Length: 279
Image 1 (tube, rainbow, N blue to C red):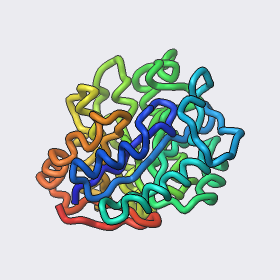
Image 2: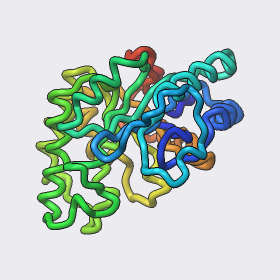
Image 3: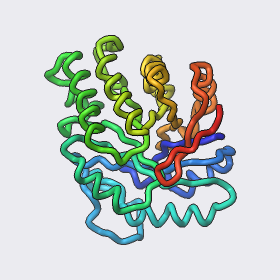
């Protein structure tokens, strides 16, 4: 099974990739199944006031960053599913950048659409971005790592409408102090993974680690092995594509490495239920 389960189109504020071009590119590459997972980040981004199902990319020009334009997004995915039926399986998903205080907004959004798959990510804490160093500023490396993982744990203790935890150690990508010892976060990561496993949730392996020049996988091999040892079996692979050149990058290599680690399958999702495919 050749899949990519983390894909962004021009419905995300940081991508200009037309949805139909992405679908056509995936077919040309021989992908069996994909899931579109555009961004929603309540707390730092607003919703579109216009609920029209017509979407024009130029609407983004000169405007503040916004969440997905939901009715248009849903309608275009449905149109692509019909147009390319028999050529590729296309699932409807989103990437939810959840913070504890924004949980009620995600519950409302999840109830409004028939999602197949939801990535739960932590992109901000206290509405502060990692990539700008706003979140890390004024904190020690220990303090911002502990605060990051504590936010994720608190979110998943309360919020269950998701499929996998996205790029679980994202904070490492933006840690200017260098790699933080895994032993110092092992206990908290164990709590997160145990909670996810109890809830029937999985982990995403995000292959963008290669294009960011990271020396480890995302999440790290330590986290993946810990998830395996705790009994976790639900894994998806996603490129986190924002451009054509990102699509499905390093997907096959990642499957081989997961197999070497002792994982037996990767998953796709339909109506929020995992489907296992042997590696």
